[in-house]
Each structure stands twice: as C-alpha cells, then as structure tokens.
Length: 476
Ligand SMILES: Nc1ncnc2c1ncn2[C@@H]1O[C@H](COP(=O)(O)OP(=O)(O)OP(=O)(O)O)[C@@H](O)[C@H]1O
Ligand SMILES: [Mg+2]
Image (cartoon, rainbow, N blue to C red; front, side, top):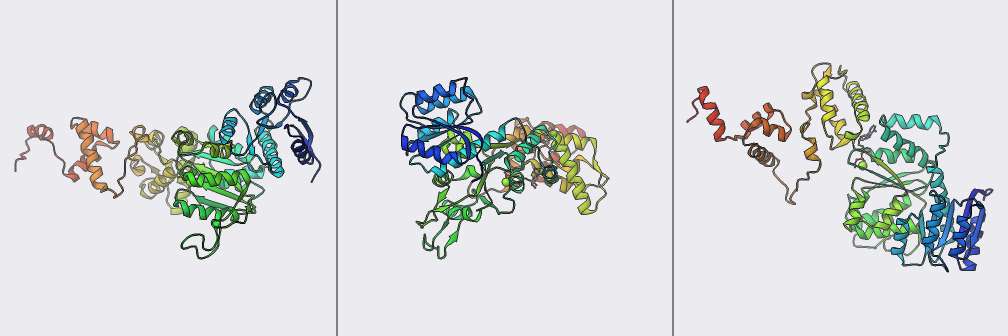
C-alpha cells in the first residue's frame, strides 16, 4: 500500500469489534479516520463547526440514539457533497433504497467484507473528486482523440464529453442514456479508450438481443451440463472483461430475474457460472446504456430501483439531435465531406432549403438517421449542393406528430404497402379529401401524395365533381 491519501472519513458503528476492524482497514489508505459508536455522537461531530467536514461517512443504519438516516441528513446538511455509505443488515433492501433516495452514496450489506467497504470508500472519493469544481488539467492528447471520433459542438455534448474525460480514469459505474442513435455506444467506447483499462478488453453485451437464460449464460458463463445443450464449459462476459470494461447495452430490456443477478454482481463483485459453485470475482468496469426511460420502467415495476441506483452512479445523458442544432449542422457537413470523398463525388454542401429541412426535421433516428440520409443524398445529388429532394426526408414537416407515435406491429407482421394505403386514406378522410391538407398530415409534398393516390388507385367523389367542369369525360 502507498502512503495514505488526504481524505477525512468518519466511521459510525456501535459494535466495537466491527468499528475497530473498519477503521483499521481504512487507515492504510486514508489520512484521517475518526470513529464514534452512536448516532447522536456522530451528529454532534458532524455538525461541530470546529471540526472540518468529513468527505465520507460510513455509518450503520441501526444505531443507539439517532439512526443512520439521521446521520446521513446531518452530513449532507453540513456538506452537500459528502458521500455517505450506509451499512444495513442483510435483507433490508427496502431501507437501503430509502437511504439512496435520501441521498446516500452507496450501501453495503452485513455481514461485512472489509475489502468491500474499502472499495466503496475509494469509489465515493473518486466520485467526489470527479464532481468537484476543480477540473484536473487534462492531457491535450486525450481531448484530441475524443474530437476525432466525436463531433461535439453543442454545449450539451461538450458537457457530456467533459464528464467522459473526468470519469474515464476512475472505476465508477456509468449509465449512458439517450434516444436511439444519439451516440451512446460511441461514448462507451471513448470511456474505455481514455481509461487506464484501454489496454484491456472492451466487451459488449446487447441485453435486448438474447432470451433470458441465454443472456445469463452469456454474462456469467456456465459449467458443462448446466442445462440441456451446455455440452462445454463457457466463460461469461464478466470474466472476459476482466481488466477491462463491460458495456451492457439496452439494459432497460433485461428481465427481472437477470436484473437481480446483475445487482448481486455489482454489490458483491462476485458471481458464479450457471450450474457452478465456485465463487468468481470480477474487476470489470461497468458501463451501461439504455434508450428507455428507466424511471418510468421503475414505476411500472419492470426495472429494479436498487439496480438503478447501483448503475446510476455517473449519468451521461445524450439529448436528441433535434435539440442540438450545432451538432446537427457540424455532423451534416462532416458526413457530406466524408461521403463525397469516399464516393468521389463533387458535392460541396447544402442548398438553403435543404439546410432549412435539416433543421426542421425531427430526426427520430438521431445521428444514425442523419448519417444514412446524407449517404443517400450524396449518392443522389446532381448538382454540387444537396437539395431537399436529395435528402428525401419523409415526414420533414410532421416530425412532431411522429415522436410519440408507436405503431403496433402484430406478431404475424403486416403488409407495408397496405399500411401505407390505409394511412393515406385515413389522412384524406380526416382532411375531408382535400389533398393539400392530407399531404400536410403525412409530411409529403402535394405532388408526391397525388402520385401515391394514383398509384394506389384511390378515388373520391368530390374529386370527380371538381374535375368535371374542366371538360374531362370520366364516365366509362
Ligand atoms: N457526436 C457524434 N459524432 C460523430 N458520430 C456520431 C456522434 N454521435 C453518434 N455518432 C454516430 O452515429 C451512429 C449511431 O451512434 P451509436 O451507435 O453510438 O448510437 P446509440 O445511441 O448506441 O444507438 P442505439 O440506442 O440505437 O443503440 C454511429 O455511427 C456513431 O458513430
Ligand atoms: Mg447502441
């Protein structure tokens, strides 16, 4: 162990043996370890203006006098950046969740593993340094590498990138949220690249892609004969990611059973292979991502709140592209240059109206959609600038309506042409068969709708009446 680092830690525990044990374990690494045996004693120390505030408070939940939650409150009152780690009796997970809600940084379950406590304190301090206002001077090289992969012109993305730079050197768990195509995977890759683990593996698991038992065996591995078809031992992703980073993608789609197992690994850093008894330890750094609203999932009882708290130590949120006009334009230009070069086409940029369309489109598929649209546009463009026709952004004017709309796909599938036809008829019906208004509802031009109507062979009485005076004889 190296010399103790500057940090003030308070340990609150009424069991003497345990308290001394914890203090001894922490003393090796941290310079000031104080301890008290009661909740009231802790609160008195914490609120004493003559004593410097503690950076980390490790407290038992059940204490003589005031309880752990009250200690927690007084610590946060004294210094809102204090990290409080609660120790709870095994099985009182509800209280733990309540503690996290009250602002605890972390919780550990008894019986205690002293190594675990130390690890939690390290994390708490890392977290604090990370969020403290003083940003450590960063290597220019890292910033440069990040900007090569990532366009970040908007304040929101710059902030996200800044957090990436600060969180990368630590072992903190990171949760990346954002709609589909906003760049969550790119950010996960960067966190790994910029971390001291970059020499180790970056292992990715898409939690939505596999059914339950397969996902478990994928994550934790299995022993030979663990289930039918398990004819060989398999090393899981947790083991593979040792010394590196484990990227758990689409974490919101994980089943409750697998969530419970994952929670255990995050809590204990231990797991065993399916069908195995040997306890394995993992030191993989966890980065998780989801495009789902996890708070909503928690309310709907589809996602465990305690797991959420474990994952949500550092949150990086990527706003949708439509809320980042600076990135949108910078990305559009970068993609044009890239594709023009790749396809050897003399395309320079966009016409005024194409730019306006880029800005008004809602980009439900975000950066991925932009990338694909521009690839096609560069291929299609006839002049040196991309026009709105080249972009062919359907729904460019009705983006707002599509955002919250989720068509239901029946299990047996649909006939897309028929769906399109029904939508056209519905739009016409709703606009009293005025094609201009229906075109507006569908986000296509009048010409395009008229072409579709003809192709689909849709007719309406009112159109005939209107055309009659023009002298067309339409009676067969
Ligand atoms: N800021 C950015 N700069 C450059 N390229 C980006 C940026 N954000 C996203 N991309 C590109 O957009 C595409 C989609 O990004 P990515 O796969 O990371 O999205 P995602 O959020 O993981 O999406 P999903 O939820 O669908 O998995 C990738 O090709 C990625 O390289
Ligand atoms: Mg992704």
